[in-house]
Amino acid sequence: MKNKFLFLLVIIFLISAVGCDYKDIDRRTFIVAIGLDINKNHDFVITMKAAVPKNPKIGGSSENNQTYTVEASSIGLGLRKIKQQLSLEPDYSHMKVLILGENFLNGSNKTSLNHLMNFFITRRDFQNLIWIVLGKPSAAELLKIEPPTENYAGADLFLRFGQGVESQYSHNIKLSKFYTQLNTPGVTPLCPVFSVKNGVVNNNELAIFDRNSKLALTIDNEDLKIFNLLTKKVRSGYVFSISEDEKVVGFNVIGHKVKYSFSGSKDHLVCTIKPTFKLSLEEGVEYNYNNKKAANIIEKQLNEKIKNLFKKFKDNKVDPINLELNYWQYKPKFELTEKWLTKIYPNIEYRVVTKVNVTGKGAGR
Image 1 (tube, rainbow, N blue to C red):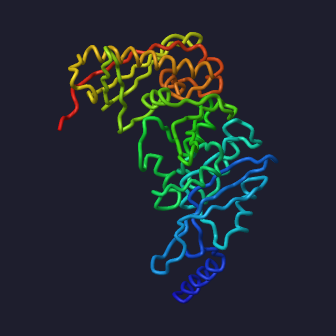
Image 2 (cartoon, rainbow, N blue to C red; image 1 turned 90 degrees about the horizontal axis):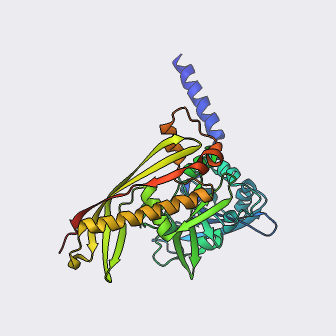
Image 3 (cartoon, rainbow, N blue to C red; image 1 turned 135 degrees about the vertical axis):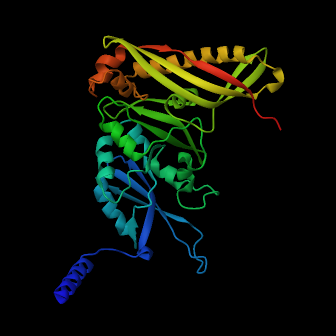
């Protein structure tokens, strides 16, 4: 009996060994970022940035990355054609960023965003936690940027997603969340925009799409800052400045939260937005500005800015704040549906009640 068991184990091992396509690490090239553009023939232009491992004892090239480009009629075909340029097996387990070119931003591509996201989500060798971004003027140009401070392949891009710098003017999203936004009825998809100017990467824009995966609008600067305040926590804080008698006083946000409530019927729905901010004085300490008076000025400013931003969203028939999900809590029997953006959302009336609490001065040194 024991001999039969050992014989069976040997057979299983031999079968698994014969069918294994495993390649050692020294026979792989690790793809860290992929860029997708569309050419004049409406074919995909696929650009890949691969990490080049270096052995300090052997020496060799000082480059830490290699870029490959191929054109194909589909993503799947392109990933197979790219192997013609490689001597090593491409490995996507370390891929961190997926970049879509400006063609996807203006809606001139022949393949929908839904189709592309389905491809990357369902393939087993891609991680769902990679970051997604739109690149201007193209994904290829974005991948070719190599700042002198980049220590490893793709570091300059990857560190912009909260791993390095955190900015009040950027909003990042992962592939898995973007895929969910595209496939949840009534939910508005959004994606950050990275642009290249004079060899420098800027990431201070946010693209907002309609339910047909076409660009509805982009927001930046002050609008994007307000949007971030309403949708996520930012540890770096924000500064609000008020000017009176040519005196500028600045406040840093050290805490904030937002509550949404609904009243009325679906034909005339009233959404009350109640943002609360805890501020500390950062600039203009020498003016001895009255905290209560400063709080009143900031409350009025924020009420107006938030109302204008929500009006801009409603006019473009997009809901990047995801009010539909908040309304779902208000009406548990409500079902997520595309009618939210066409029947209910256009009839919403907004009321903004901002509360600001100024706690005092920043720490002096």
